[in-house]
Amino acid sequence: MSELTLVLIRFAYLAILWILVLSCISVIRSDMFGARVPREAGRSDRRSDRRSERRSDKRKQAKGGRPKRGAPTAVAIVEGAQAGETVSLEQAPLLIGRGHDAAIRLDDDYVSTRHARIGVSGDQWYVEDLGSTNGTYVGSSRITQPTALQLGTRVRIGKTVLELRK
Amino acid sequence: MSSQSAPASRGFVHRRRRGAELALLLLSLAVGIGAYLAVGLGVDGTVPVDLLTYGAWLALLVIACHVVIRLVAPYADPVLLPVVSSLNGLGLAVIHRIDLANEAKGSGFGPFAGTQLTWMTLGAGLFVAVLLLLRDHRRLQSLTYTAGLAAIVLLLMPLVPGLGRTINGSRIWIGVGPFSFQPGEVAKVLLVVAFAGYLVVHRDALALAGRRFLFVDLPRGRDLGPIVAMWLISLGILVFQRDLGSSLLFFGLFLVMLYIATERPGWLVVGGALFVGGAYAGWLALSHVQARVAAWLDPFGSDVDAYQLVQGLYGMAWGGLVGRGLGQGRPDITPLSWSDFIVTAIGEELGLTGVMAVILLYGILVERALRTALICRDNFGKLMAAGLGVVVALQVFVVIGGVTRLIPLTGLTTPFLSQGGSSLIANWVIVALLVRISDQARRPPPQLLSSDDDDADATQVVRMR
Image 1 (cartoon, each protein chain N blue to C red):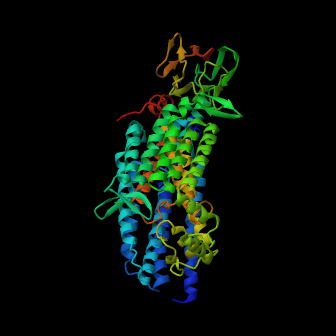
Image 2: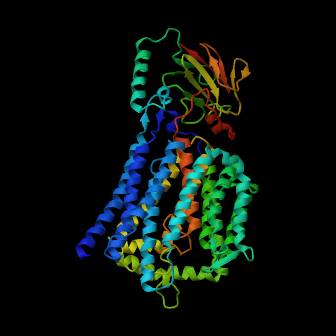
Image 3: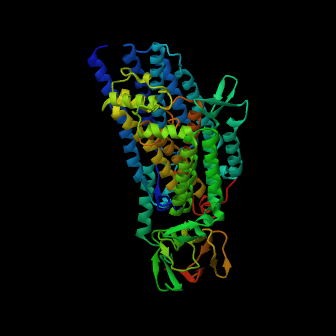
């Protein structure tokens, strides 16, 4: 085995080692971006990304093209310290809570960090309690499972009352 | 600990990346088998006769793990298995290389590579078994106290007369017939499960009750109980089993998990103070701790017994930037170069370039564990993934820091590289648990209406299937 061959083997091996390290890093890098699909399409995890992308495009068109009459588009705060604010429903599901990452951030001592969530399934809007301390009330009853919301149903969270608006 | 799973709730869906995993796995096989080939060419000048069977066996193990991941954990992190398989393959080749040197010298040690390959097979088997049997990591939460008790029993086993064995001055082995086993390696996995289960229930009490003192939030006296108990256990290991490395590992693990669970730097201050106090007391009272510190401060001194450390340092210096080439150095001069000092053997034959690649691979492994903890949707999984990552990180830091004279040398195995069956299979189980948690974490979030999984985040209900 000549000296030169051994040197070549040495550098070739180091190269393979570093190619592995760098490929791992590049997989991690591409992994950071994930497959960015809307939530509805995210459920179709059995299908390929491309198909779900196309599906979601279609859905978006349908949504944008002819918005259903009478469908809620925003959540309004009707009572409480922040009364008068509205938050668009476009980015549903919306997280409600005191935490800084909540879509509807309520500055209220009776609200948990992640208090409740408003989401949609088909055409039906739901509110779901996320294990909050003081509970979420629809009407006068404390909810224990996702509860359907109609336009104008009053959802009480702490001292704040929310409702869906057109 | 923030209970938000940031990307998962915003319409961000992880891809499965199984193809990427397969490609990385093939590359990692090239690393493992290539090292074996380079060793054969470097030592004997010929291609090893068993290259094909060896390579086929390694490939079979790795591909079997990959297929099982495809079947039962399709969303798992794609980088974990390739990193582990490359480290393990490299370790096997380096151990084989030291075997050849020991054989040529007739030193009577080894051969170790054959048994190591058997242990790797067993490790891969356990990896598959964990993935097949444990379909939801949250089931482990119901085993919190069982795991804790089992860990303590395992840690105490080497002290039982007749069962325990003292090797190289440490009483951390148990021997049954010709087999010896280090129960502490299994105990570390169980301790992570026990800590995660305990902290997930008690973190509010630990985080919220307490008073402020000198800009530091100090925890309440009664909440200090577990940390003091843990401190006493690690000191006990230090004193009775003469095992510096494990006591450091367990205490550090508990401290970091406590910090992650409570987000209170006060714990780090308290724990750091306890650690410094304990280390100082250990230095005063125990002669072998004094010897280690003396060897760390002045390994080249005339009255210091630091032959092993010095040989390791010479080896790495001889290796230089790009190393002597596999099979071209003299790693066998360093005592125990196949176990604790394997990093110096890699430093000698692959140089700083190779050691940096190895450290980066460990870094990637730990990063993926912490990333899994960040995106995991339940707090138990978060704590467990972070704890498992911290186990690997601390172990690598303690052993590589020790042999490079950054910190005093303490005996611990280098994960996946060192010869040693108990450590190898324990680390394969750690990776299997990480794969399982990352599969749960990266899976697209369930539908809103059937979202029991999300409820578990807030109410910490363990769903039993």
